[in-house]
Image (cartoon, rainbow, N blue to C red; front, side, top):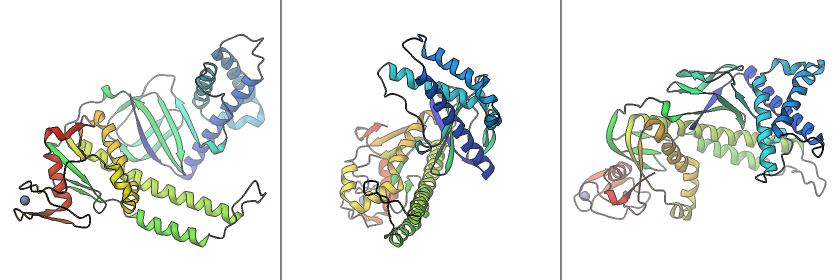
Length: 378
Ligand SMILES: [Zn+2]
């Protein structure tokens, strides 16, 4: 089992629909928890699931029928079925001593809900649309590349963007034919995001730098804002609130651009190449260099590797990691001569055989040809 996650392309009406369902899921969870807590458990001796079934009946037969709750009938009942399931799991875990006592959910916990189709599995078609049972058909930013079979859909909102994720069985996906069977090395860099040993290049999306400058400017302009302080009884000013909201939005924008880029790139690479080699990321070395560390975390090298690895069973690719001490960027691919390579040097000019190559491409070629004792499976 693994999960597939896609960002939804929603219009305002659809966004409202999602928010309403998230609210409904939260309402029913809290409704169930409230009634569960009000039960005198010393006298009522039945299982958690039986108690919750009774509570669910109260919701469907009484609460939902009250005129002030008419809004509930416009929303999917599959959503509150899942809410009750989640609540049941939370209570059981608490009773078994595996988790803390369940608490009421608030808007601040983030918006999410689950649609579980009890009628059986749902087949999803390839393409840029997804049909979610009882909710409708929605557009996707990145299309589904195969037909999937699933039963549970989780919708969640992260920084203003809605995502759908669903679990599928890896065994059910037909094996893919890879266009390139040869071993391919991938060099990750700050200038060019990824350089492949066959010459393909992926440059990182531009918005990062621009967005970062914008953010810094905004922070400076709002440096005198009045932030709240509960101990000193100071309230957050409206301008400060506006500022925090817009900062969150900007961060979300950066995160979304990066997320889309990494998803698209790793899917494309996993589909095209059957055998991929990437360098081990030298964490300590990179963090020592602060400028580089910021660039690395910005670009998402770790996320890139993680996505390639988790996509490997889906696309049946082989992903290998090359030892971090293997001198991929310092070695001439032509004659294996090793020479120092300062970070700002874009060209590898071999001092031994006069071979000249682009720095990243030279490294990618070396990764592809790395000796077996320097290679391990991701
Ligand atoms: Zn050489």
